[in-house]
Image (cartoon, rainbow, N blue to C red; front, side, top):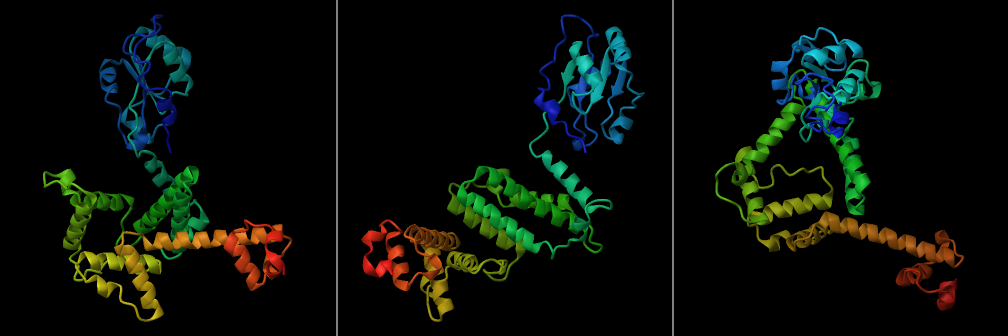
Length: 361
């Protein structure tokens, strides 16, 4: 696996001229190739190749790249500099760290290359996943299947949600990577299926197709959409047409948490024109809970997030009351109902002397 980031960080193109020493012939260049992109050379290297009297390749590039360039073998530094002083020489390299590249650049050779496109690191991630899953890789990774990975996908998703809620930027970055790992892992397993194989490229291609088809106002000359609500309605219409769904609730993932499931169903039904009084009708305890979720969603809230926030607030109040009890010399595991009520009411803001006989136990 090749990584040309060191070359990029060194400023490709920064040394596009030649030194005043004239130590190398005009047209001599070091070309940095990021062969994660395949057998592709930077466009800036084409004129240099046309003028070159000799082309060499530093070890580290892919065999396919070396073969395509018909490398005769890289001479040692003195011989390379001597030839570059007489005639144009082009040196292809994975980065600017090799002694040959350093010597040529110090002598005034041009540095040619292209900044890698956004997303190129995903190619390394796919390569690492393939290595882990392939023979000679990780035994644990090799044993996993879609079913065994389900719980990890759920866990990583909730850890990502925690990072978002905590506004923890380092954790957000890490957890996004962990969720991405799950996508790559499942795609790699899917590629091994003997009946219906598909891999990460098919997954990405399907995603691109979906995004383009559901945003005709962006990718075609169709009518524009002026607000988010109109776009959501357009998205639902296009999705209904694509998937040929018979019911407005088809396609709702029933394995999601109950509050989120209820909110999604309410959202679909409301957009389809189901009367709101039907959505908020109560009866059994479960129906009452559904009605509460429906009211929250119809009022523009996110019931799952609101319930989660209320649960976290409850946990924080429990901890605050326990801390206040400990500060007063009480064991939180032995508090009476009245003590719990007192500590809960003031969140531990008052002292032991202010509580009176009932609170003191």
